[in-house]
Image 1 (cartoon, helix red, strand yellow):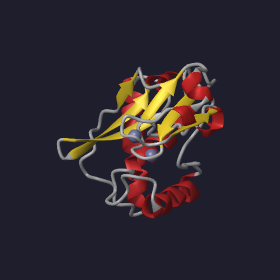
Image 2 (cartoon, helix red, strand yellow):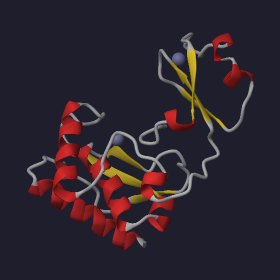
Image 3 (cartoon, protein in one colour):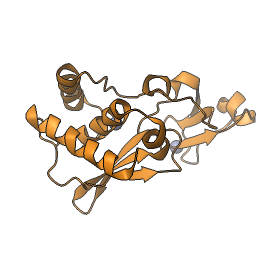
Length: 173
Ligand SMILES: [Zn+2]
Ligand SMILES: [Zn+2]
């Protein structure tokens, strides 16, 4: 899919949300930014100059179906609603509305399989600080991954290791 097609899907998703009276921001950059580096998330909603910029994984843009791209864009667009910067009750309510009306499966986190992609991520373990939330992606096993209890975060907090399915693919880093 080329940039223009992706931008058109963004515009269509915004129209869909508005048709359901979901109060998405009127200051969303009409151009989706393709992110080539992020491998652990499919989309991201960034606050910028009092408005919002929606990012999409370049790989999803290239290999994903229009449905998969729209679903990820819709997920991110809902984050532009007031009180929806996280996946709280209000965001969830809007997601359920979009899913019911348009057949999406917007949820808190998505996975490669559901979006029709092969998981080629190098990150296999994610070490997370239980106090400050700092995330340390790791590509392979290491003493830290095997024994997080022997280490602590620079904030002094305890560390926990997530692997495989536990790694949340949206809004991760
Ligand atoms: Zn910490
Ligand atoms: Zn999200």
